[in-house]
Length: 134
Image (cartoon, rainbow, N blue to C red; front, side, top):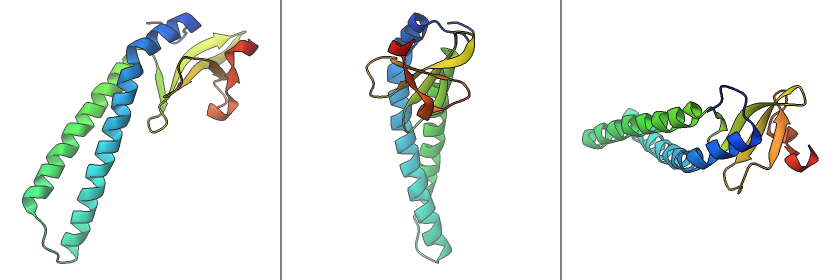
């Protein structure tokens, strides 16, 4: 993959390779958040002299580590393809490029069919502009 400067076609090719990984990362993030929430609730209960299943806490800690490692593998696959993750929850992925001499990104969000947007690197998602305007 290009080192920091994708053509639109190269970005679209990379997206085809990582699209499912982005969705997997989102699912892993949701699962990880649920485990953390349960751990926090159990730890609060424990601090308040509640009866807490130590085995459940060990299982949740193990699951948290597993999910964290899984998330790191997904992140490595995405960034290894040259893409930048701008938001896991939203599935925001940018591909660095230069457009008319301006440092920019080809921009994609999970749920979109294709890369149809770009924005200067100085602006974020709110600065997205349609590719059709180029």
